[in-house]
Amino acid sequence: MKSTHPQLVILDRDGVINHDSDSYIKSPDEWIALDGSLEAIAQLTQAGYKVVVCTNQSGIGRGLFDTDTLNAMHDKLHQQLARIGGEVNAIFFCPHTDEDNCNCRKPKTGMFEEIAKRFNLGGSLKGVPVVGDSLRDLIGPVSLGAEPHLVLTGKGLKTRERGGLPPYTAVHADLSAFVYHFLSAVK
Image (tube, rainbow, N blue to C red):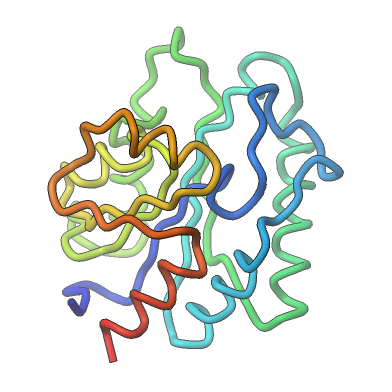
């Protein structure tokens, strides 16, 4: 199903692009791409899609790492992607903890509203695929019209087992499987 908006794909980070950890990813050394994830992003880039990462990073709010360290992790992502012809066009992150009660922490919609604004989508994500490994990655953007895609990497298996996914959530083994499915469907 072809997106009704500019060619945009929104990805969660930890558990979708890179390995996740219950003790947080706190340094560039701990940031390790999942097999095939960077190549999948490169395929999206080469097919003309803008790729946006939308990620909760409460490790900052918890004092486990700072914004400079987060930027260093993202520099590693950008450098590894550049080597294989991929690109992430923007990274939106929430540095807060649940206790901060902000509007940007997923599952709230603040970051997704900002993405819609930044990419001139008129406040709606209608038709934009959003890929995550947890319910909180999908609930907010679905309320703005996004198409939900769950990957079974990271927390994905547990998320699927718990149930309660938004209606019409497509389930994929990993980011590569999502990209294969998505690009096949839009040809």
